[in-house]
Image 1 (cartoon, rainbow, N blue to C red):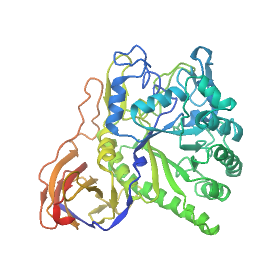
Image 2 (image 1 turned 60 degrees about the vertical axis):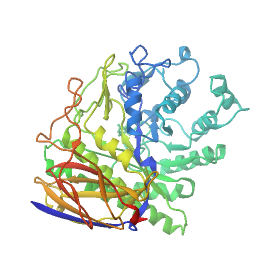
Image 3 (image 1 turned 120 degrees about the horizontal axis):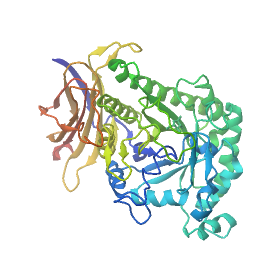
Image 4 (image 1 turned 180 degrees about the vertical axis):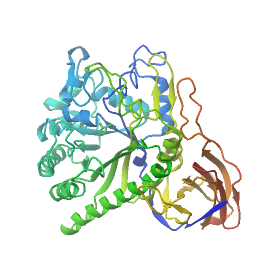
Length: 507
Ligand code: AHR
């Protein structure tokens, strides 16, 4: 059997993981909102029309923050359309996705849903068809306590307490020609700067995310970020990144290597932020917000009836192979826990999503649900640097792709006991099994609490409403502790989680 080794030490800390690394995204798109989170009349719907079965699945994912309302949608959105009495809300032609938006759900209803889901709002403002003035007014409506026209309007709408949304995105993918109100870097930077100033003058406590490139393949990638940050550096906190991967060529080896590209993307943007900061001799560091990431390609040729209300759109059905890449993308984010502070799995319900619904019927979990759920729940604490020695392969676009992609997370002291808890996440990209030894220095008396894996003979297997549990994690076997760490046999093309605890001697 092929072998790999991993070395780490309890003191090799990258940094504490920001829980917002496990954020997600819900756009007014397809069936994400309507028949996704909201379906009055559904057997599990509550008094507000929110599906209880969906809320249960969302809560299992332990998501701290959800980006809303877009995406491309936000660049044509008037926030005023979605507040106040429902009977007075306009139906609008929605140009980003070629549908009719009824505005039954808007800011206040979504904020109420977030409370039930246990998540915070990450609100995006429209810098496509609108600008700094509307963004300023929106912050006043949402966050100002009262005594002004817009804060009193919120109170009149039935929300006496300010929402106090902390995290705000300055537009969405403004470098993309598909975007409503597409801009050059200079045009966007000037607009974002002026919006940032007045939004923060209304509420100095908010944090701001400025839009980076739509993906690493954009012709202006790199220069866009440098110019945008040149203008906005002192006024924003995070630079956004978006990236989706697909496997239309059915080339598994190449697809599973895509996280090398994701890693390079993150490193390039860290360098870009620090280059701009360095030129300004600034002490401030801009952090990254990877606020759209996922696999997306299965639904690329799907069509819908133009101007229909909430048609199925972007309903990718995910395979086991996709789940392996999602597991690897999460490991990549953890490896950069020192600079990536926010990340949003795009999206959450029905639209390129881990959770699917049948109108009037059940909600079910896609394959990608599982790596996200386990990493969100057990990838908390401090990420550790690992030194790996693994067999490698070459694929169509990559050379020297390590079979093993892995990270170790120190979850901290054990509750009501001595010692610490730690979790290993790993993907074996290789076509054959891999025996991996982890040397875990600084952790004595290790015990394995749980070994979970996702693997199978058919990498194209997926779940469906009829077979919702066809692909799901099972218990791994054969992992064994020794004096220095743990040995884990990893089946070919598998995703692994090992939950360990160390004894009192480690303290
Ligand atoms: O998540 C789907 C779309 O992908 C978003 O609306 C847009 O921001 C991105 O291009």
